[in-house]
Length: 115
Ligand SMILES: [Zn+2]
Image (tube, rainbow, N blue to C red; front, side, top):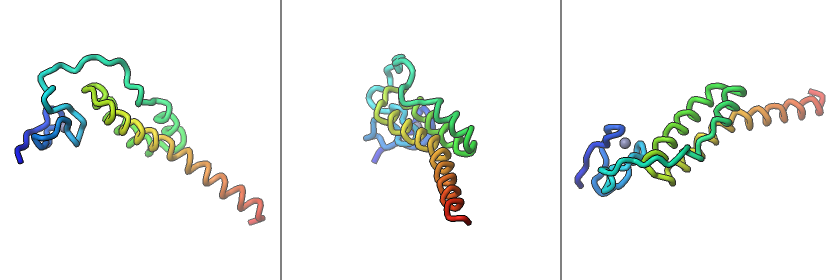
């Protein structure tokens, strides 16, 4: 199977694919067309990054990475991939909040049981 390098991330992409599976860059037939400006990426949310930083900052790192990937996919017109990575970024941003609530719940339960 023929393959070429992705102009965005430099990794090998099968010639049959229209989008780079690593970064979402459009490498297919539309390669020559300049990516048109589509407005801000609606799948990117700074809110969850801020939440992750507040509750447990290490969780903000994958969140930022996924939102960055989401932006890249959005800029090359790959709506589906932009949403996919946006959801992942949101999940990472929400994780510390969920963990915090679970720990508080366990502590309240322990207090209620008189431990
Ligand atoms: Zn790529």
